[in-house]
Image (tube, rainbow, N blue to C red):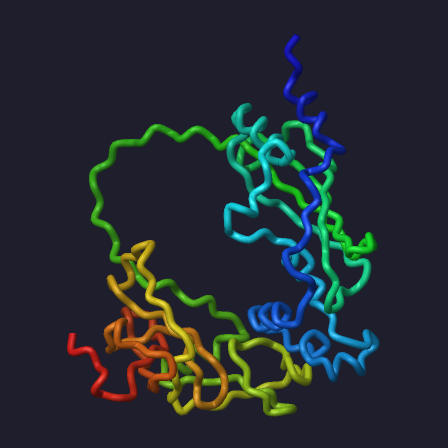
Length: 325
């Protein structure tokens, strides 16, 4: 007798998603610093041992949202789970066979039992919590799959949980292509910036050929990218100062793939340290990519890249480095 798909799916509920997995490293200050730099979180309880010691926590703690980051696998093949033990993989394979070949994450809820402290070493284990009946969604019919991960320290204490849900769905069949006369392709344009009340001053300044930096009106801290609250003193009052337009290359990359029609074949994406102390992600112009060096001096060049868009680009301060092309 053939078992219906729904019954086969429900046989996974309550099973472990796979073997428990121990984090490669304990909670440590360098990784916390990287995280805070990436998200722009300047709370000293995460990175300043002296300030953290005077807080109610008595020492440095990890940002709660880092919970999942501590146990993420590396990129090497040695980190892969054996297929026979990877229950979520078996479940997804069954749904693939039934035609539910596409997947999209729908929501993730984390609960923090206590803060993570330096030296905590986490292990995560998961349980398949529920699998819905077939549902009709805007993406197509599918099943919602939910599992719950529990994070524990080496002594077995639970420090947090994460409930994660995905939709495995059957994509709609592609409609037959209609034969239409070839149309002239529109010229590709650079992506438009997302302008809000917090960033409008910046782009209006660029239109005038100025680079404006947001400044806290209470403590004088400069900050970029713009945001409504000062990360140092939490003030909501701010004004702006005009940058000198001078800076140095902090880091850079030369993208090669994918090829983007709106960009030249070879271009430089650079992180520039402005003389005022903030950083700006931009493009370098007027220099061959192979001639760019970390630490080289650059100057602002507000450039009109099309009829509507002006961007704050930078060129070498030394004319001898200019690309004759």
